[in-house]
Image (cartoon, rainbow, N blue to C red; front, top):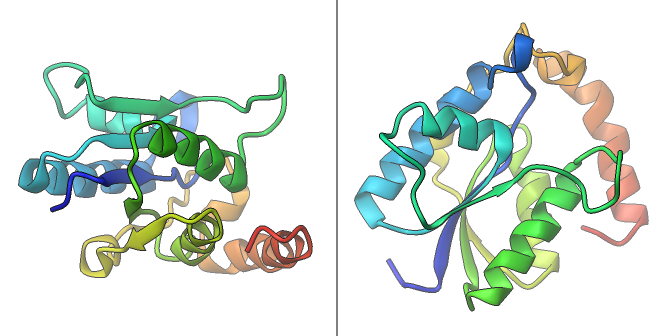
Length: 164
């Protein structure tokens, strides 16, 4: 694996009581598997990072965690996570991202990265079994139907803003 590559992950929902939830726990396992195989640095949204840290003895030095929006009290959406990830990648001259995201979400995430000039690799076999979480505190990540209700307008908005 080239050294200009990083593992990146976008969370998908959140479990009750501040727990990462099923989707993010599944993504953390994928991240760990790829990390163990490649040794690459990681840039993870906080829910995936929290799930990963439960699997490790300590926090790796080459783990960046995207926790909150740059603007106070603003929702940390997909665009913002990708933008902050892009900024970390740019500082380290990383030009390629191994993207870990829910299969229903990965297309929008990779389009954002590509628009920002980052090449993407998606380990489709590794992410295909990431589940929806019926107990997610974010209603739109509980099942495919609810996801569609939110994703269709999101894709239109992203397109209108020139993000994808």
